[in-house]
Amino acid sequence: MRPLALACEGAGVLIWLMTLAVTLPRGVAHLPAELFCTAAAAAGMLLSLCERPVWMLSLGGLLVTVSLAVGFRLNLEAGAAQIFWTLPLLMLFGMCLALCHVRLRDFLIGMGAVALVFLDGELIHSVAPALQSLLALFAAAALLMCLLVHLALSVERRSGHLLRLRLAALAYEDALTGLPNRRAFFERAQAAVAAAPTGAFNVVLVDVDDFKRINERLGHEGGDRALVAVAHALRRASAPHLCARLGGEEFCIWIEDAEASPADVAAACVSAAHHLRVDGLRLSVSAGVATVEPDVPLHRALALADEALYEAKAKGKDTLAVAPPSGRMPLTVPTERRAWRPWRALRRS
Image 1 (cartoon, helix red, strand yellow):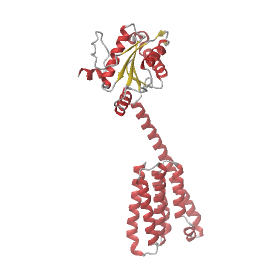
Image 2: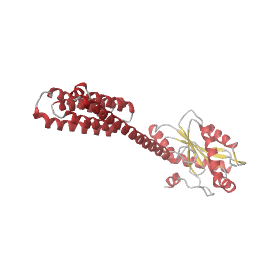
Image 3: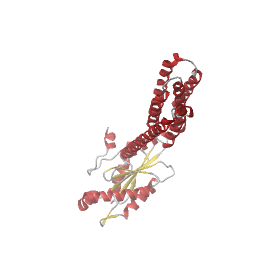
Image 4: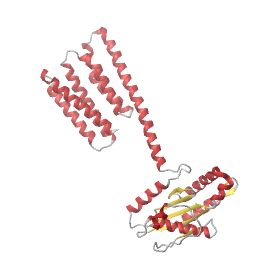
């Protein structure tokens, strides 16, 4: 909301300066006070321009609003038809406040200050007694309309904000399991490696054993239920480390804690999935562990973990294997067909 509030404040100050330039030849009775209001509005603009907390932005906006309202009110006193311009100006200020403020409290404070400035005792007593009730009715209707506009805009802004938050969350969340997705994993891992280039991190690749057989026996819906059950078990077993779904039946755990044992985390994941059953079918997973050392790129460590994972598969599944700590070891070419993984293309290049 800061850019919109600043735009409205700047437009208000510009309109006020134009009004002041047009009405200046009529007289200088209120010129010092009007110049003071201009300076106060400029100070409020400067306060809003600074990168400060939200309450500072609200304070700057309130200062601009009250200063401009007082300036227009002083300018109206020199005119013969001030009552004619009071209600339109009150409505204009109310609409601008409804547009700029999200919180009802800020809107009510600003609207109350503007109403006190324009609907003061002097103006009310200058109206004929027979028209005072009509003036009060019009003023109440204007305030109520501004309040309804603010509430309607607040609902729209909040729903749009929640939608943007939801879309942002979906960009980093796997829709089926609720775990962080591939994008979230790689951004988190790359940020951690960039922040500590000399540190050592660990990755654990986890793959559901015989997932094709699960799909054949239970169908795709049963396979989805199996993936959800495994994801929940891995999240509990690997906490507080990041557990993400890379795609298909493959999951990855990112371990930043240097004191945590990646082999123990992998063993806990294998053990947690060992007791899972979906529609009477027992599930199991295999895990491969590798270390992201300072001289080992992330995609190289993932490739090593992939090799360790298939070593665990070759040992009979439902177990784990740890890749050697050195990233300089040659990678073996598997004889069985494997699922496509993006880092394999990088490894070949």
